[in-house]
Image 1 (tube, rainbow, N blue to C red):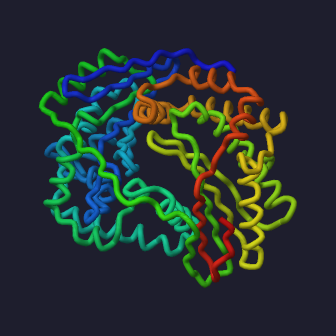
Image 2 (image 1 turned 30 degrees about the vertical axis):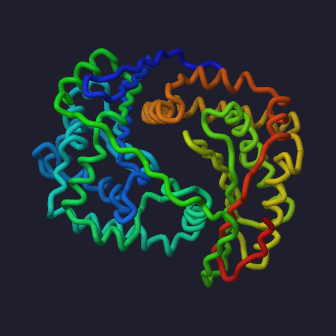
Image 3 (image 1 turned 90 degrees about the vertical axis):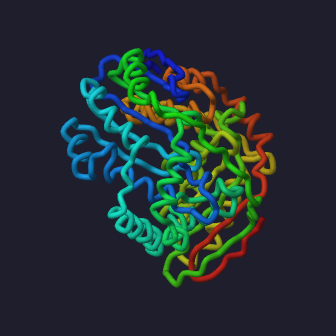
Length: 418
């Protein structure tokens, strides 16, 4: 596969924050991904929901501008923006024309270093966050996936990022502003740019904007171990939602790329084993899939199926059978055609992600945290090209799923074989 040649530069700003820049020839846009250590795992246990409220409040005025003035200034520059709560970080994202990046940076920097968090904005934001949690009642798919995560991953890495209603309702403006001041520190944060951007110019601009920003973000305190096992929530509907989670390699494990091939073969569209065995051959479900989520500290595979109460038990049994076949316990190796389809799909996804400067900036920041260094598209392509069927099957022969977690939402509990 041919990918555009690029060079990634990583620098340390004067304030102590890491800067990652990937200039991309032939594009006019710039994607920015700013990782601030305001993730859900860093929230005190009695203040879960800080991140959810911050992700809204950051857009409601900053740097002495009220919400309308700040939004209008960014809109005039054509800068889109978004903030979302992740486990370890709050990610502030933006996309703009390369010609406008130096004008937009002061406005974006203000969101991190001097957000207004005005008292008049607190209650509307609180209401939005509570409504988001209450809306889960109408989204059992999302609920079952969150339940599986909560029961499978150790605290506090198992949090959804949405917070808890009781906690959100107790958060005062003082807690919100003081909490943001504690986590929004340059050391432990990183900012990445990809696209029509010059590393020297960006470094100089940020050094000037952030010269008074200082401090180190707090770490994460580990909590209780995950219970795992089987967990059911009764919901009197005509559907059953099933989620299964098991362990997988961490990002830096040598087996992580092999695991990606395994999951692509398991759930890579209509040719994947889950779709074929659970839906095509048996007609058990309307939806079935699996995904691999490697992080710095742990890895996890999460599989989902949506079905009817009459077919739920067989669906769960077949899903468990297929998951266990691709492990040391089952020992069912991949065929050459499965391997080839998986690799083609992975490379196609890689090419498509490279066409978005926003996706590239996000990937640079993710690599910085998970791997300690960012990779170019060609670097990743080379890793995929280096894989062989024998390597993947050797990984399957040693693959341990660990203690499983099964979560179901529906009219009645199922028989879960663990």
